[in-house]
Image (cartoon, rainbow, N blue to C red; front, top):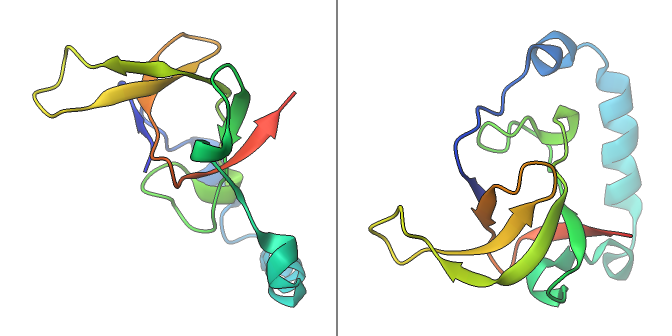
Amino acid sequence: MLHLQGEQMATERVKKIRGTRPELGAILRRAYAEGRDSDCEPLTFDDLEVGDKFIVMPLPGDNSGHDGLLGEARLFRKINPTKSTKSVANIYYNAARLISSDLAHINDNEWVYKVK
């Protein structure tokens, strides 16, 4: 689960689009369902090196307010873990958003797309 400092994820665009083109959803779902397991193996955050740029892989559905496949992807860079000074929990930030430099914690098993 992605934990980002402060943003509301839902957008009006997503609310307007969701449910209006189920035929595209069916095509995408079929493409993944018909693929071999080895063709669908995702890259995980743990696979990345410090300094790598990435986006978190969207999944179908709302993704806890992240708008799923219709949402905007945020570009991050993996960083050396930094302890949160704002949290009572033992949270370490391990990613920084490139545009705003906001820090985030991303689980090692989170699926990602590496970006060049």
